Amino acid sequence: MSADNSTVTLTQGTKIVLTFLMSLLAVAIILGNAVVILAFIVDKNLRHRSNYFFLNLAISDFFVGKLYVFILNNLL
Image (tube, rainbow, N blue to C red):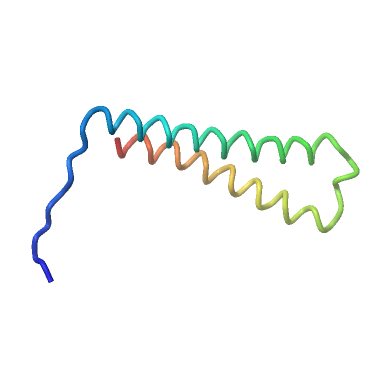
């Protein structure tokens, strides 16, 4: 076991690529879940008891995606 607590420093190009990819992921999470929430609101045929689970999952995942954006801003 190594008692060495070394850190890795990233180059500027690597930070830019990682920021772009993580931002793309965050946007996909937020937009995808927003579409599910909007479809549930607009289409009354989706309002069945079994679909409320998917709505709840989309809402929680939407907020996780929003939280991911704030964490991303603090990391890089």
